[in-house]
Image (cartoon, rainbow, N blue to C red):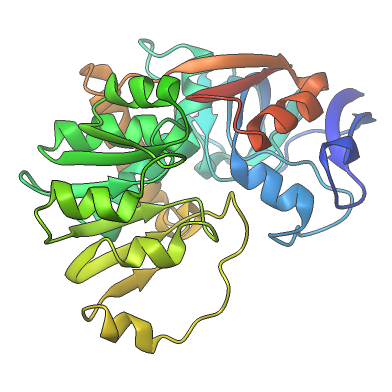
Length: 324
């Protein structure tokens, strides 16, 4: 038997239970990985609360982790026992060991340690599809990224800067403004004291930005549309402040023939070849030093509830990692 965090009922952090589970042996096409580090993400909160429906009850939350392969099933040829691997889009990570289809795993370069790998897969590949697929950020672009001091935000600010963009980011405090600025954000806006729409218009001399990346949701969505220039793209990829209310899509035409997308990593990394390409792009920018992964908090896996409380209270910066 091994230990895992499981959810038997939806609710607050208190529903996260530390329990014994039995995972068995890998079957055809599967591997068993012994986790060394597990990433914490807001999507874990969404599943715990029921904002996103879980496939079953009880379930093990968590989408990303890194570890060592300790068993392989029949038919697995490109991964061997002892390999260091990571993944970033398969729920069930809050566990000491787990079974996974081999084609969902990515080999970790020797230059990247386990905690960094666990902190970068979901957030880093999210930043990659946001900046290179939802809207292709180009040199000279000015972009707006909400929650710029968060896990995805710090990666995206650095990556966008590396691509030649000017980055505007919203944060909640002076400390987070400095953190964002230190990671490529040219114009941190402290939204608790400044009107971010007015500041974006000032920075862009009234034109607005071609793209807004918004993981905050309810509190920022409608005003984010006001930051866009004509034909701008609104990328809504999270809802940390709550679900966006239904709205008349005619608003998009009235505000300048805007585009709106609600993407997920699960879609963008559904094909093995896309997953590999995205991971390689991430490894390349991290390996080159263009993007630094900040693991600013660690908790024992058994203390996942405490980690969730800190994340929801916006007390964290960068990435948080759970240690089995």
